[in-house]
Length: 179
Image 1 (tube, rainbow, N blue to C red):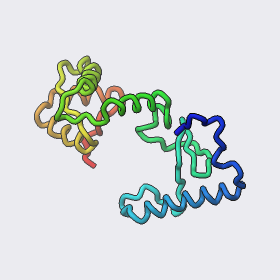
Image 2 (tube, helix red, strand yellow):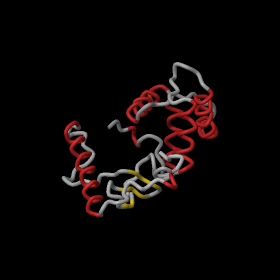
Image 3 (cartoon, rainbow, N blue to C red):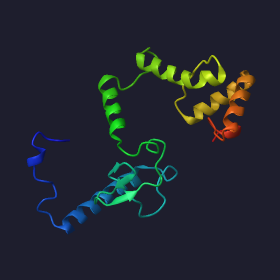
């Protein structure tokens, strides 16, 4: 976090040798790995190599290790693929929303929820006509709803399938695989 006198504050690395900085980064990296390995089940482990990359921060398409070394992120997931890590507009939007309302439960109506549903309607209604929306919390929940929809609304589902596959896209999963 910036301090009021950030420009006059001495950098944390000032007075340290390169070896001190390398040792501190190595210790930070080892600490993170030890903490994760101690608590995370092997079936859930997200790293398979004995010496994985440990990231400290990200910016755009780049990830940075505890030692400050930059790595091009070729495995960016859904949260960063379109905007990169820490895009200023995304950070500003998250901050503005968090200052107003962090969680918008379905138990309470809100303008945010209405805006969200109207945005989905604007995308779907031109393709399918009038829509009724039930947001899913997970991919598994979305697949389960798709299976149930298939039983109750085959005409709508067939139109969705034709639209998705005609554009070489998939809304949920081809053939509604439940994985």
